[in-house]
Length: 290
Image (cartoon, rainbow, N blue to C red; front, top):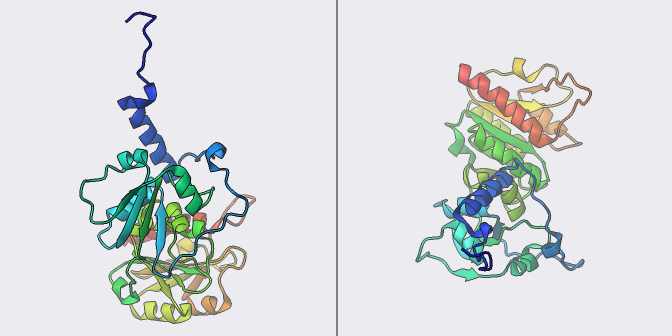
């Protein structure tokens, strides 16, 4: 090729560049590397407000989150909104049984807000089917959240729960996040992989779990013994409280035992999602040894 002949081949469009971008995006979805903020595209109006959603309407976004939802046979899908580039990355088949709308990234910014890392895709769906506690009788490990309100934390806890093969996450209807795009994005697909059960009364739910053979252990920084020495029984319900407040007194009175995470360093408390991951590791090790 003559040096005067322009090379029209863009390295970004090569096969290997596409693979590198996919690998990088997958690491960002897992939280292995941070997602850079694109201020050039994501500058939006200061008075942006989220759209009013119907009770049976959920907006999911992000490549990994939407891919998991599309693969979940229990997910009832209303409409997919996607940019041309995101459609390629999703590898959508022909003749999908729901409407597919081609959009620009700015269209999704206007709906989801300038800070949502939607990656060019949004899925409008119905909430997942409601699960009952009695469906968990064969699960050896479940998580119970006592008014953990931050959807980012709940989503991160979901990822850990799936990683350690927990059977469900149980939380209250009040003072807990409902199924949402923020929680699903933080869960990185885990929302589609385990039941998220919201109940009215946590103490009553714990009593029902006790009748199903679960030993309930409340995680508390002032617990009388380390978690490792407090594990017993063949089925464990691990109970975690909200940051700052911790477990409510009624919950503390209802669980079988309170336990702490011993930390030798100067910091003696952890984010609830980090505490959940460490506790799940300890409980799983105990259950595997039985």
